[in-house]
Length: 111
Image 1: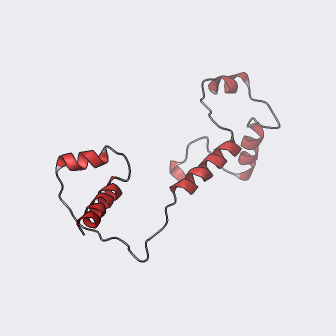
Image 2 (image 1 turned 180 degrees about the vertical axis):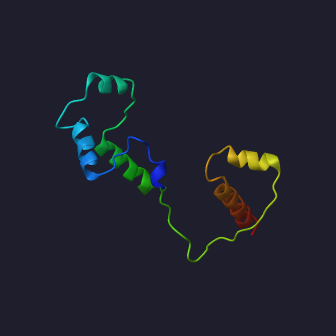
Image 3 (image 1 turned 60 degrees about the horizontal axis):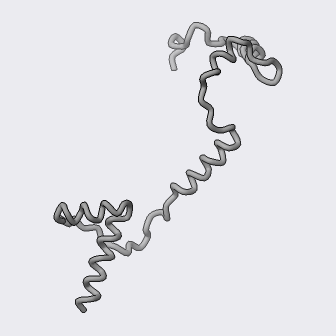
């Protein structure tokens, strides 16, 4: 970032930083009425420990099984009737898997 693009009130040296930190509300000083009013309408849903726990939980859920080193399925392009696609998509996530299961069942019954 260019130094001339910093805001005018940006601390220029370590002493200014120390003053800024000392003037900030925290354990050493309670917030002023103006600072409290500024946060009066703030929506805070979690404390920091709860937020960290929730983010870790979401991160764990988001992880999939990873790359498939030995593919068990083959990628193809398939054109289906709109009503067939709609039927399977209406069932929610996993609609492609349900199509695969339906076709597999049909093959087993035909054999």
